[in-house]
Structures are given as structure tokens and as C-alpha cells.
Image (cartoon, rainbow, N blue to C red; front, side, top):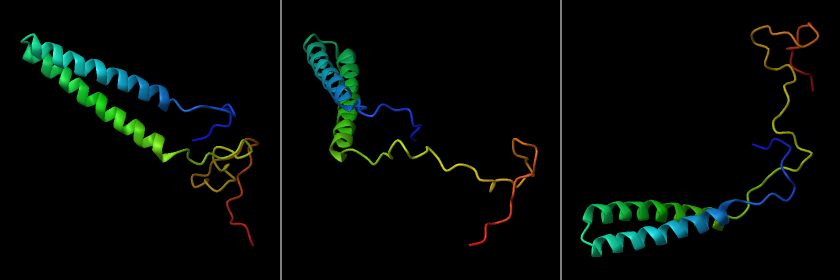
Length: 107
């Protein structure tokens, strides 16, 4: 949801997340190989599981990057449609103490 105070040239964190996932994947694979060579199958399995998590994260990040930018409304678009008195089913009054107009507008 747009709140209206985002920077105009905001950047996506997906590229740094891709780099961190790749870095974690490489270290987890290296750990799994090192522990397997050292005769520690439990630690090798733990590193392999961590490598699977990092690979899944990397695949999701690459998928999101390939989807491209999504539509974001301009700065003149409010984050949501303002309430114009249509949600007064419980008899709530507006800020001035008067009842809101609940009749539908005529075309």
C-alpha cells in the first residue's frame, strides 16, 4: 500500500537480497562438503538443509526480479479512497458532531 511519503527514486532491496542469498548458498555448500569430508554427517546435513533454504530464497528473489517493476500510483494518488460518509452503518457521527449523510448520491 502506498502511504505517500516514499522517496521518488526508491530502490528495490531484491539485488542485495540476491547477493546475500548467493553468498549464503556458497558458504552452506562449502560447509556441507567440508563436514562430509571431515566425517561429520550431522553437520553436513545441517549445512545441506541450510543450502536448500538459501537456494529456495535465491529462486524466489530471481523470480521477483524477473517479474519487473509493478504499478505504483503517483504521488498525487492517496493511499486509499477517503471515507465520504458511506460507512455509517452504526450511526457514527463525524468530527463536527453532526450525523453523516448516509443517503446515496443522485446521479
